[in-house]
Length: 285
Image (cartoon, rainbow, N blue to C red; front, side, top):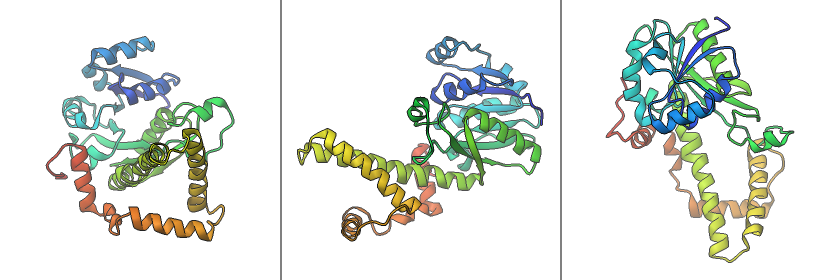
């Protein structure tokens, strides 16, 4: 693997495109930034980056990063894959389209997928910048998940080098299959964790608007107890009290469906991805 790669960021003016581009700018890699929308182009140039036509960028790049929305990945990959040089890596930042078989393929092009873990609620922080970086990729440490459809050690090392840069600072890169990454994102983290986060916000609103609790008081006790709940359940820091366990059982009975674990089945994953990608059904290639 060369220490200096040529990397194309397609969709460089979008939310993720701007994030990964900001980190790539700090490296010695040769990076081309491509963006079609006028608003995105303005963001790229305002950040001091030079725009390059997609076709020109793709043809010479070792890694092509598709930082575009899921719904655009099929069309964009159709356009760029035929132009890529042999042995190059097509890297997407979300597994849905890759697992659903929506990406264009070529026998001599390697597909890779990655997604940031985001800084853990338990990650050690020291500076104001680290505390403020809840998403990751700026100051707070995070892990990343990656999958690659190749047995090549060189390709895997190349992909890991890029992943560590675009999501920096990265502690560990965890390797899984494309299917496993799709099972993690969306099922584990969006279908469940993000849904629970939204449920907590709805519960906070109910405490304030229905029960009349002052918002600062409700927010303070919810945020503190959320950390305790996560620490107790995921780290085993302290046992819950007997009364708390009874209240937890009541909450489970009142809120959670008995068959909720069906979301981990393959057929339910397909339904979820089809809905996310606006498809009638998922038909993997």
